[in-house]
Image 1 (tube, rainbow, N blue to C red):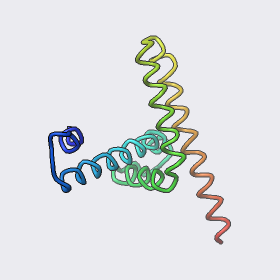
Image 2: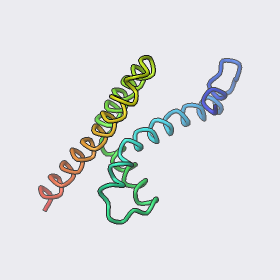
Image 3: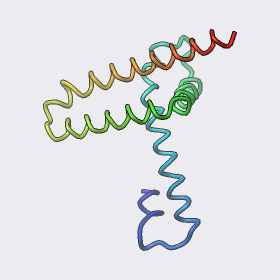
Image 4: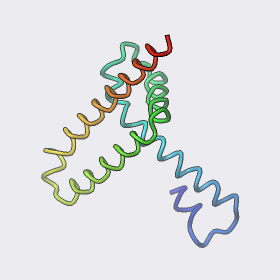
Length: 119
């Protein structure tokens, strides 16, 4: 609702529009980080909420093109799942979980490869 309020055509003012776009970017980063939260919960031994969210945010910001491409594909699959209700529980949920898990695996492999190259 913040985005709809700040970016509505009836509102004037540069500061209000700026706040609206900041909200859009913050929402996109938050949604991108959510891709990694469930797989991180399964993989990490230390399951403190702050650590999980921090690591998900760092992965989202570290691999933005990969994350937002996957997010767009998952949004498209969700729209199809909503249009055809039987697909939502049978296809979207398992595919979304697998895509998130494999996205985390690919990102962690890349991090490990970069770490080995640096040392």
